[in-house]
Length: 414
Image (cartoon, rainbow, N blue to C red; front, side):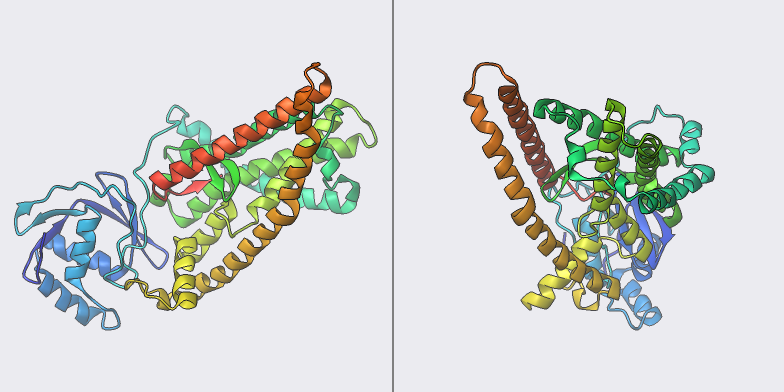
């Protein structure tokens, strides 16, 4: 619909919460969230009061002389996002576009992003019970576990996980099954930490399958997390790693208490320690959307940090236009993260080219030919398990890619 400076545009019912450097605005009908600066929030308030776009624009220009105010453009932005209820007294259908295109910022900073509609889940977990998982005492114990793990490995370097810990048994088929069962159990425990944190704050959670580049992961969707204070978000983001560190401490303690023994319990403890150690390093890869990435994003207040950094890189290196989104005015945190992003991608490409690809090729060359052996021996079943695991991982990765292309950018932690 065409609007002018004389138009009176009334937005839908919105809930506004102060946040670092701006405001989080929630569409009360759909549960979608948007980050907006103060001028945009003030514009919404004045629009609800019934002022014309021209009147509101003139008022805001006086109050915010350093901001570029374009109320007609801002109204168009609200139309694109389905946030308009009425125009000049005429009700507007509030259908939302099918695509996930992000509106450009008519007011600097504008609508920086949005999350998918909130979906319920795990509501059967009592909030009172979930609070026990994120009690300050439990969080203190988890923090102490991090220090204890570092101290244990420093005092006993032999506890540092090694690649051979991934092969506790001679049978590759048994190793594969062990990896699948133990790793899945540890991942579910990690995600349970996120789920309990969300339920402790009365929010729903949903467990799904996602990916970080080529790595398939389970992830907890946290669409409602923007209702929380920044400190509470930190708790939810770090709850999974807290569970990891407690289990890692147990695994290291078992190995330290029974050194040199080769029983199955010690082998499983070493396997679990290696799995959790690698996952902790993975969480430190901030160029992917790991738990620590969301902690960084939440701590800096630069939401959509990765997307904003990519856009800044495209404009800076490509010399193109940012469509009026203000990429040239991004804060220092966005520019610094862009450097980390480039370095991280280079590191990951090197890791794929010189580590994962050769490892996969060598494993396939050693195992797959035994598929031709129909005698039912150990080598044949090793090959079968290897192929099935590879097919499962590849199928989940393709599923996650397709799901991401068809969905939005909800907050996830995994």
